[in-house]
Image 1 (spheres, rainbow, N blue to C red):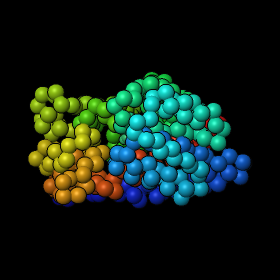
Image 2: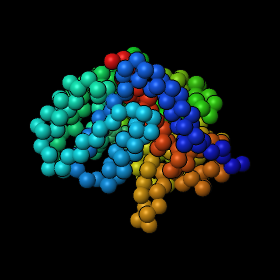
Image 3: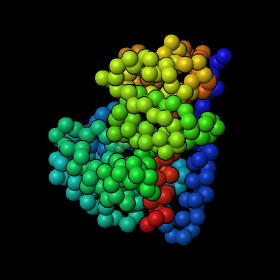
Length: 281
Ligand code: GUN
């Protein structure tokens, strides 16, 4: 058996097609959805992400502005910029690209973003709403994971979903979303005992650890659904996920590639959240 490949680019295109119509309607009523992206420092991967986010906004007819600040920017100056963006009516969503330089406290920055403009869904108030099942901005990558599962018509309810990784950006929120879809969820991390056995018991595996190709066919239950959130650049320049794709696809029933799986969905969900923010405003 070889797995069905879930094409994140295709699903993204379908969702962006729908968003385009919504953006047109909002513009007719005098509102152009606007996103501000803030990048501090010169991290090469972050520069690529930020460029892609801004370009995707423009392709859909949204307004975007990118604030590129030097790595030595003070926390006070960054917070002042966020305060200004909070007040600007043409900006509906604010995203501060992570990670931030070490001298800046991530928590202070996330909490400075207006809850109503927190299209990343990282503000503790949005996280709290997510946990209790209230309306909120759902973090983009986790939302993208669920969309991919739904587009592939994969039953989540009653399944054992194993999330490998416990970050605030992916592991924790995607676990909550899977739970809301009635999966039985196990969250694994670096201290998990018998990691292999746990992964082997999974109907759905979400890999979000940042370790190149750590999950292979031998770790998987035959027929498992494998969603790979990892994006790792190898020394030879190749981009690979946390899953050994060529190997794992021999036993999985569905699998996402890297690139072209979860990656495009993250930006699409960001655009969706920004359109939603504009509609609410
Ligand atoms: N860095 C890696 N992923 C993300 C994300 O989804 N949002 C932000 N702001 N930074 C990130």
